[in-house]
Amino acid sequence: MTCHSSDSSETIENNRRSETESRAVETDQSRVASAMRDLKNTGWYWGRLTANEAKEILADSPEGTFLVRDSSQRDYLFTISAMTAAGPTNLRIEYADGKFKLDSVVLVKPKLKQFDSVVHLVEHYVKLSRTSCKPGQGQGQGPGPGSGPVPLGSNNNVTVQLLLTKPAYAATPSLQHLCRIAINRSTRQVRALPLPNRLKDYLTDYTYHV
Image (tube, rainbow, N blue to C red; front, top):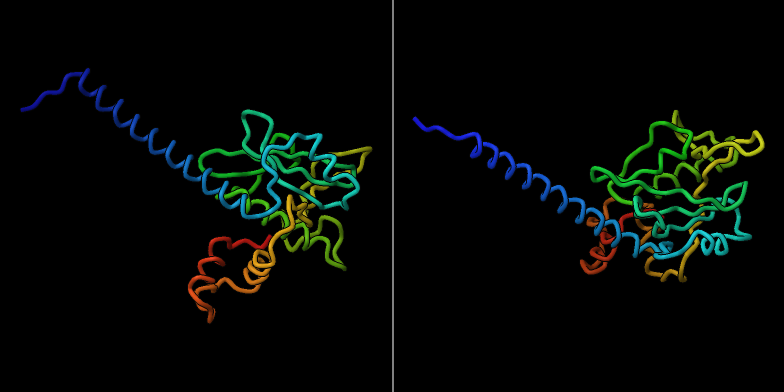
């Protein structure tokens, strides 16, 4: 018969907890690093940029123009700066439990979708915004419940919507990158295309539509 002291059991439990926490940290670091790689491929990630600098960049841009930058607040990693009907606005991106979502404190909607990457998050809202802007559809009327632009709040009793339709590029994207986006929009079966493996690798390195 083997007996374990309470100190021994506590040590084992602490070790397990430490291992779990360590794995969680590694997962977070890996997820954020992957998100950063995707962002750097977009062309509309501006890195370290202040809110005022983002405002100047978006000045005179049409509604729906947007960019992503590093957040100036410690509790957040990234911020979306976008032109709305009321002028430029900034919306922080939360990261928790391995997922990214829009700042739920600011938004009207209580439940927000979560995503594995920042680019996937932006892609989702770009799709909703572009759908709502199609002829024949009213402002904010997407293809189903909970779709359409995200309401940010009211300005003079008029609801201000978050529209993301046109990225503001930090530099002119290459023709190859634009072609990659166009191909991604038309098919998800890149590996089945009659292309050299090197080109397939390039296409699958960035699988987004924006």
